[in-house]
Image (cartoon, rainbow, N blue to C red; front, side, top):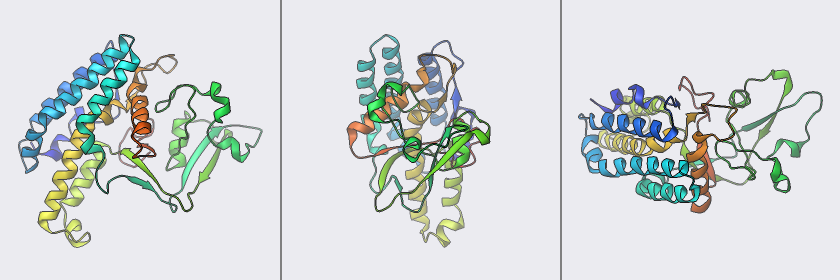
Length: 288
């Protein structure tokens, strides 16, 4: 099986929703199916690189499951250190030379709030002030008490993330950067968009428009394929739909919040770019 056919398998489709008794059991089963699918890739030049990195990939998955188990046992700080150890295994695939999402000043971003009858002031459309930390609840990529700024590349995603409110009871602000750039860790690529990217690289477009030689196109194909496969367990762990929306504890937020801590400590990134779990059910567009 080749990489393109493999990415069409149901195990790769994202976002996932847990149907297991516990979150760690769900992850264990998911990663077992994932490793089996990767092992079945036996076509193309990527196979040698996958074999060379198989133990790293398997250990990465094992440590993520162990971290979830430790969190469930009541040791969140120890669970984070295990997560940190897991990330160190694939760090070379996360931090790449000249690779990263840079927010440029020509790209607009959006933020929305529910509100009706009163127009919010400019400052009210930003994140909750740090002096009002007590108002901050748990979110996918942020912990209680830590104000974080969530922005989207479309008003549609804002609407989905707010639970599809009446558009007349929703206020939106548009953000533009001036004379500044931020670098973000990018985990926003879905299997569907990855397939399209690989198909583009293998087409005449990459040779005619991007001016790549056949050898360069092949190298780019292998590099992107391997990076995506090595990142996939992390992307999957951070994009699991919440099983119980009214629950005080949301296990689906464990790894996104751990990743935020890691990025904060790492200093090589200013934030995280991820795809919207609510808006990406069909995985055909860049909903982030």
